Structures are given as structure tokens and as C-alpha cells.
Length: 415
Image (tube, rainbow, N blue to C red; front, side):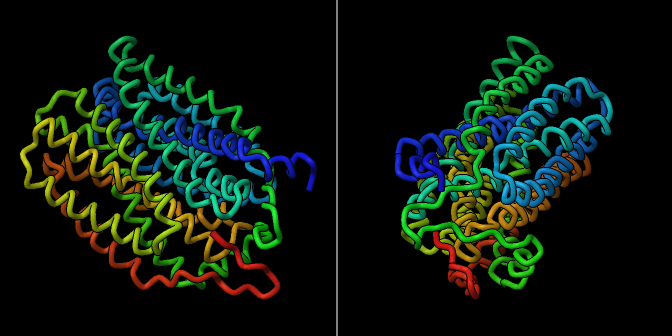
């Protein structure tokens, strides 16, 4: 271990620098992506492609965001997070900047679905959470992942009203391009998070060694808890992508002013900060599988109540707040369980595979939302599916055994 590494592992102020870098990157990439739904209507008006076709570009982005993460995670496990994050931030900025220049479905798929979403996957949670877990001592990892997750939520809270203000002042085209340039503020984080990871003081805290990718995947695929965790995260992706893409449309369909949609997205981000920090605190005190079951059950109840409530501005904002509390609070316990099962050596790749399941659900949530609305003129059937999936996700976590996988000759990872 170098003297720099020794200083990093023993200086708490550098732990906060790590958290600032990871949370700030997630804030800028996640905030930009989650705000894109605000521009769906202007894109539709400008291109005349239809909500269904534009939703396909958003849906492809959800899928591609997930597909990039296992590969980005595998590269980061080998060479460190810095180079991967650098490329990712540049791609998000480029894709966002080019989006308003695209006039065809194929062009939107390239800008939104390939460049922006792929870059956000490279600079996304699998790489950021793994880098944070390696650079933080084990006893701080639960809260650290909550802080990083809250960073993504803060980005959404900040970017959604900013997008609305920029649109009013500059027009939607310039607003999108300014957001693309703002993402470049995350570039310095690539330097902070560039290393492959520091060992915490003491041999019992050392990160588990990385295995060959094929061996790590074989071990994960043989673990029933890993499959159940992935199934639940699929449902999370469906919820998150549908809300991020179509909540402004849901609000418009209820006859409410367009700014309510931007504020609803912002409130989701604001309350998710609370949910993420609370979950980061809770994962060290209660069983992570039980916390995940509680989150999904809460979503099911919230959507059911929303369906029967009057669709006023106050109801919309309260609903956004409740969903915000659960929006990405699934991430800290999911990250925690992956690390607990398999250690941190291959964590970026293995969590990236779980994120891929999340984004397959995200593809369906974004795409089906547009298809159902065009077919029925309403989002009601998507809400019904949402409730059923949430109940299923709450139940599927209960059989998970929270125990590390016994690895001969390799130290068991801890959380």
C-alpha cells in the first residue's frame, strides 16, 4: 500500500471527499436522466413522432443503461473507476446536448438511448457504489451507499426545477443543451475515484480479492438469493422508469399545469434524499431483505390510494413525496446484500448485473407506459400492473438468506 493509500484510509476528511465525488457524479448523471421525461412533450410537438415512438427511445435508454453497467463494472474492477467515469460523463454530456437536434426515432435512440444512457451507465451506481465501498471502511459502507444514492436524488430535485426554469427562459432546445454542459462538472470526480480501492486498517477489513469474471458470475448465478434480489430489482426498475418518463404526462392527462410535472419530479428527488439516507442508516440495524419488502409494500399501498384519490395539485405532490421516499431507497440494501453475499472484489460487475435486471424492468415501464396511453388514452392499466408487481416484489425478498457465501481460500466479504 502506498503512502497516499495509507493517508486516504486514515483521514476521515478524505472519506468525505470520496462521498462528495461519488454523490456529485450521481447527482449530475442521474438528475439529467431523470429529468428527460419533462422534455417528452416538447420533443413530441417538435418532431411529430408520437408518444409511443419517443417512449421507445426512452425505453431503449433504460435497457442500455442497464446493459452497460456489468461491462463497465468489470472494467472498473480491473483498472479502477476513474477512466470509466471519465468516458461516462463525456458521453452523458454529448448525448444530452445532441438530443434536441434529433428529428427521427432512430436519432433519438442514438442520443437518448445509446450515448446519454450508456454514459450514465458507465458513470452510474454499479461503478460508483463499488468504488465507494472499496474506498470506505466496512463500518461506514451502509451509510456511504445511502449518501451516494441520496446524491442521485438531490440531482433530480435540483435538475427538474432547473430544467423548467431554463425552458421558460431559453426554450426547451437550449435548456437541454445547457443541462448537457452542466454534466461536465462531474469530470473532477473521475480523478478522486480513480484508484482500484484502498484496504481499510486491519486485515479483517480488507476488500476481498477480485476473481475472474466468469468464476464470479458462476458463483452468483448459483446463489438463489441473488436471483430473488434481481427479481425484486426488476420491479424497482419498472416503477422508477415509468414515473421518471411518464409522471409529467400523467399530470397533464389530469388537466393540471405543466410546471406541476416538473415540481413532482423534483419532489420525488427531494424525498428520495430522505429515503436514501434513512435506508443507509437502517441497513446496519435491520435485515436488508425485510427493509426491501417494506419498501415495495409501501409502493403498492401508495399507488392504490392514489388511484382512488382526487387528482388535485396537492394530491399529486403528496403522492410524489411518498413515492420519492421509496424511489431509490432500494439501492443501499441491494448493494449491501450483494457485498454481503460475495464481498467487494467483483462487486461492480455483480451489482451491475442486478442493475441490468432493474433496467429490463425499466425498459418495460417506460415503453409500456407510452403504448398503454396511446391505446387507451389513460395510464390506469399501468398503475394496476404496478400494484401487482410491487406486491410480488415485497414477497419475493422474504426467502432470501442473509449470509455470506463460503469461499474456500478467500476471505468472506463484510458489509
